[in-house]
Image 1 (cartoon, rainbow, N blue to C red):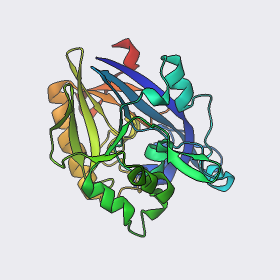
Image 2 (image 1 turned 45 degrees about the horizontal axis):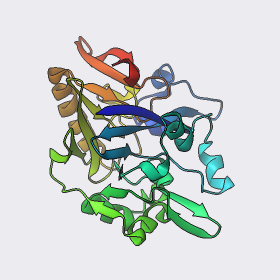
Image 3 (image 1 turned 30 degrees about the horizontal axis):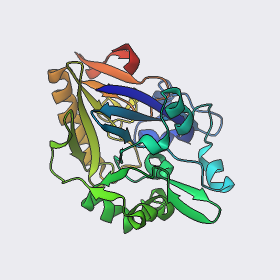
Amino acid sequence: MKLHTIDTGLFKLDGGAMFGVVPKSIWQKLVPPDENNLCTWAMRCLLIEDGDRLILIDNGMGDKQDEKFMGHYQLHGEDTLDKSLYKLGFHRSDITDVFLTHLHFDHCGGSIIREGDKLKTAFENAHYWSNDKHWDWAVYPNDREKASFLKENILPIQESGQLKFVETEDGVDFSEHMKVRFAYGHTDAMMLPQIEYKGRTIVYMADLLPATAHIPLPYVMAYDMFPLQTLKEKKAFLEEAIAGDYILYFEHDAVNECCTLQQTEKGIRVSETFKLSEL
C-alpha cells in the first residue's frame, strides 16, 4: 500500500469563524489573518493505493462555481487536483473510490464537473462513498448549514448511479488497511479514515481537527453544528491518539501536513510536524 498527498489549492475563511470563542489576539499568533480578517487554509486530500483500489479521500472545492462564489473564498495557489494526480502518474479515470468525509463544498466540490450546461461526475469509473445519515443531512439541510451543502455538488452523484453508502458504525472496514471513524460535532455523521501504514496509525482529521492550531480543546470552529459534541469528540480522540502514538493528517493546515502529539502541562499539544512523504 502507498499513500500520497494530493494538494488541490488554497482558500480563505474568516479567522473568527475558524476559531469560535478564542479571541483574535490569541489565534492570530497561530494563523495570521489578512487585512480582511481572512486566513489561508489548505484543501489537502489523500490518495491511497490499496491493492487493486485507488482511493481518493475528499477532492477539494473544484472549479465549476461562478466568479462571485470564488470571490468569497479566494481559491488560489498553483496546485490543483488534476496536477497533483498527474505528478503521480494518475488520471481521474484511474480512481476506483471517492471517499467523502462529508459533503461541505470544500471537501466534495471536485466530485462534479461542468461540461457546457451539464453537470457530470469527475471520476467516471469510481464509486462515491458517503453514508445514509449524512447524505440525508446534506440533501435536506438546516438553515444554518445549507450554504455549505451545494446541491450541484451532491445530487449529480446520486443521479449518476455511482453513489454507495458506508455503514454508520465506528470501526467499520472500508478496505484491508482502512477503517472508518464517525464524528457528529462538526456536521452529522462525518467520516474520518483511519489507516494502518508502515506500522503506524494515521487518521485523516477532516474537520474534527482542521489544523494543528485546533488541537487545544477550546479551539472549536463556529462552523460546527454541535460544538459541545466536537469538544467531547476531540478530547476522547486526542487521549486515544497520544496513547496509540497516532499520526494526524491535516486537510486544512496550510503549513503542516502531519503531526504527532505529546502531553504537556497545558494539555495535549503538537510534538513533531512533518510531511507524509517523510514517513
